[in-house]
Image 1 (tube, rainbow, N blue to C red):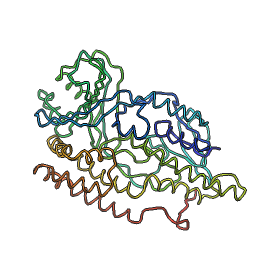
Image 2: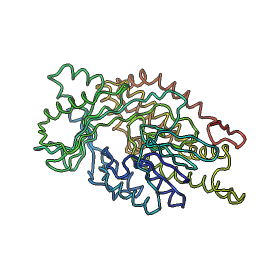
Image 3: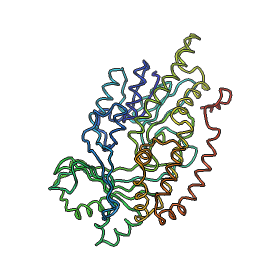
Image 4: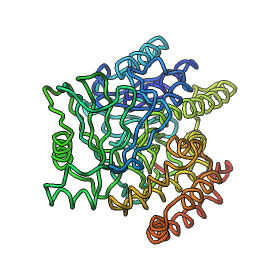
Length: 448
């Protein structure tokens, strides 16, 4: 029996385990490859990682980022905000070492299911192992192995195909990473691809490491349904040929599919969630790693507080540590859920989801118009939006500024395509009026 069972050994799972174990509680992580390399490349704004004390886990830094909306001089935007590529092995090693030092246990396996008893939960693994814990955290990412939903999960999808490649040469400035390149001249001789890109546009995202080594990724910001990887691969190959980039060798190949938006998990429930499982992907951008690492201390501290409170009561009653009833176990989990999803965060997410609903409807021309307005905003607004730092009132001000800065055509598009989503957002916001921690007598306990 441990105090916290964690399904998933990704960045958020390890970060929570490290902090909870540091407080003296027993933690066990279940993961099929505890020492494996994390598959995805993580790009982050340097200020976000520095604020978390993780700037030593950055492999490469670019002083600025660049955006190409089209091929005109006005279509080139410089973003004066340092950007970096996360050193995945170093970040994992750092978190693993802290966990091991604190006594965190690891079980190599795949989680199959969880069954809740009155005062603890039993996690079953596919190898037949059964593990018991006072609380359970689902950190399995987009697999959402254990988390329950009340409504159908119908997200948008950010799809990307990328490679780390050795090339003869490339046209990118080594002092800038390419954040978005929406240019489409490479499709001129392929009417079918050109039309597909017009309807569902993709952009090039590139991180040049040296004169002959670069990360190249063709990305759909958001679509529903997801665009197949093969289509993205063809678009990337076509774009690279147009740019005169000859790939000599592929060091890594990345297939990325990120569910964005969709309904939140049922709040609250016995199983806790973080990262993709907990609905923490930015619904408008797909950003996740900084958000989930930033949420890990909040969740971990709430778990520590809940377990400490239960342990103190148990000691006073001369009983084993932890919840002493199903109702108390529900209350402990509810307190953690309300810590990571306070009403302000839920309202913020509804605004981001509204933004995603608008982006889903934009073709290439409209997408360019949108980002022309977006990147003409103050650094405070566009950076705050991308980093999910703006409060709900600040997001309203952001939306008004975006509308004011837009062209007449873009304003018309925002009105036509945004009004239905605005009505949905307002209806969902109305449901948050009575949201919050319930009184002890109001907690409903489901029989297991």
